Length: 161
Image 1 (cartoon, rainbow, N blue to C red):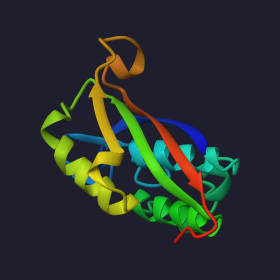
Image 2: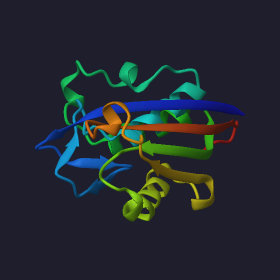
Image 3: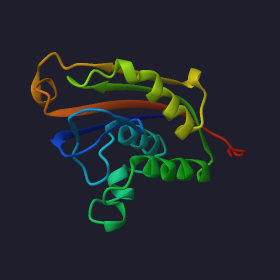
Image 4: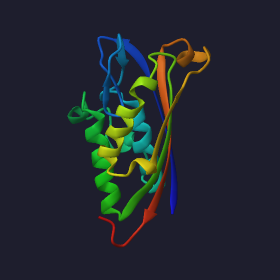
């Protein structure tokens, strides 16, 4: 068994869509990034790569490579899942926390969870999505940024699909 931890933060910017866990969240701002800036998928991808001792998404998908400019983060994490399977690991559990002052994400929690289940190809009972505020503290608390944390458990198998 291997445990991985991931973290990501992006500034909020006007004239950008807000994607969280692959879901388009209606909001007046979106996350600024080289890709679509989906901090939740980025944190999960980093956690999976970390559990396999394979660095982070910046190493695998550098922001200097034009093929990744504005790419949906769903595509990046699918590539990470393919690497995970190639290395014969199976994703057993994912626990996440999103830190956002606004928008309130609770109304989208089930949609985000369902999208993650589909992207990661694991059961609802193997993934958890939590959201909290930063109580007005720092860039997140001022509503300037959104961050996410993720912890994953991988199992190494010779017969991984």
